[in-house]
Amino acid sequence: MNRTCKIALTVNEVAREAEVEPRLLLVHFLREKLNLTGTHIGCDTSQCGACTVMVNGRAVKSCTMLAVQADGAEVLTVEGLGNMERLHPIQQGFWEKHGLQCGFCTPGVMMAMAGLLQENASPTEAEVRESLEGVICRCTGYQFIVDAVMHAASEMAKSAESAEAAQSVSVGEGE
Image 1 (cartoon, rainbow, N blue to C red):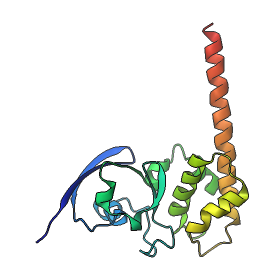
Image 2 (cartoon, rainbow, N blue to C red):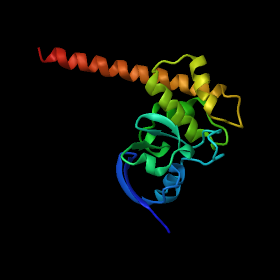
Image 3 (cartoon, rainbow, N blue to C red):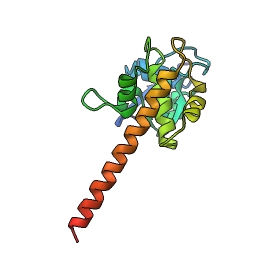
């Protein structure tokens, strides 16, 4: 018997529906059904973190979650993080601070660090390193990754300050 389940979810702000086998992992759904190959499969045991995506705003290793568990969820993959015209601060930080080597772990690292910055907008280096414990990079000693995340946090803080200043100016103009 070949039983399937219908799921509906939002992936990178696009509504998606699909028929999936109940045992299909979210990582395979993203890669094989939606052709979003930025989410990498590294170990299938949740050890490496290359498959990290955001599900309802939280960093999740997609090799540990079934696609049916994402029914009704909002999923963000590295493809939805930013684009060539406007990189996400994490992506910009990796670019400017040389936060990648071979690039295999990079999408998972970026998503895990986006999750960190969503929870803690100004982490210390120690907090960044602690958050990196769930992601394995076999090419580097992590210093450039930490530098990239700290740069992203700084840029995000500057953007937030600029937005607040612009809002206070526009509020003041209406008085």
